[in-house]
Length: 589
Image (cartoon, rainbow, N blue to C red; front, side, top):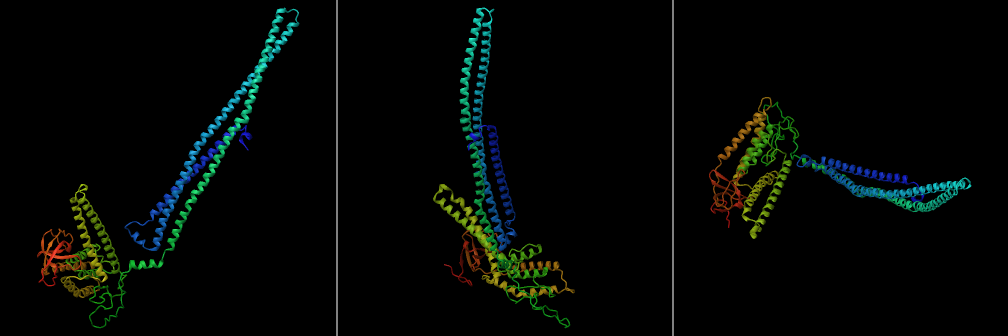
């Protein structure tokens, strides 16, 4: 089966068919190109969808993803992102392996087709030229034969006529002979051209055209094979990503199976547990007896166990004692007033407590999270301590890096000036001390919440004891204030303002009237320390000061410069010389 032998006379139809084949190939290329665009668009939409539902950083949504169901959803979003990536791979592979390759092949195919049909047209033109030569020789031979016949007839007519001279007969005879000779020459020429044409025609139909058509057939078959290979590649590109897509789907199923409803329920408890105990039974209050109205000991409006570090306060004893019912501002104020008295361990905390109570009037959140229930407060304080420890570790790593760089500069002065790093090193050290001070403050609050307060100084214990003895009275006063009005009502704003004013005045009076502690030794500042936090004091390197309270294990020593200027400095910044005769002094070698 060959186009050269079977389709020897279908040159024009073959030309149309091959052009149709190229059009089909270009149509398939366009189809694949549009498929790649769809895959890219789909992948982009999937990525945008995944990004849209991702939790925002440092937001409430990020905290919600602690639950296993939310974690599974987050895993689904991540897997969908990978799923979108596989569609991008499909688009890239189809573009590189099909679209680009077929586009290049179509260009080569067009050039090859053009070359073959140009060669065929050239052969057609040659055979047509030979045919024209044959026709011209044939017409000339026919004309010469007719002229020779007329000349012969004319000679015979002249020879038969007795009136014609002998010379005219001779002339007619010579003319006839000449025409016969020309006819013979035309015959010979026609015969030669005819043979040549037949030979050219046989070569055209049995050699040139079959060869050209065979090349065109092979070209067309290669095009068909290439289309089939491209279709296989089209399927293989999809098949290659099926395992990865299947893995993505398996991960989604795995994430769905990891959902633990019991664990989520426990997380809800940890998130919202207040730490308070349920209220006790309310005792019957008999108003028929002429006795002073009191508040039931089992009510939440009284403290559970006087003298304990933690106090629980309630509201009115009229059935509105439940923790989930909104407390009035007076109850909250009394609670924080008592809490403030209990947090006085050092002067710094006293000022912070006073500032906190004042901040209640402005609606600001307290730094120690005392506005939260005990369990939630403990979690917030622990989180803050962890963050500060991470910041301290970062600063320490930076200090170590600067120290190593300084050592390198000392060994190789050409690399840099070691003195240029002193300012940065001092700045980092100060940042570390600030962060440590901040961490110790939050650790103290955390220890208080967990019932693990560190040992405090005698003066702090005296202050704490003084406020502890006053705590029950404060609670009772708050309860009595709520019952002071004839109709049982209470004006919250006026009471809160008066409490804030009285409280601030009490704190100022307590610390103004406090007797200064006696000096138990002296100390010499080894480094300069800038006391930027409240309760600390700034010292200059080489300065000598008085020690009034030694380090209790928290890394701070209390010193005094004059009667009106005292505070805490890091123990590592000073060299302490304790007086052996002082009470409670230790001997340092």
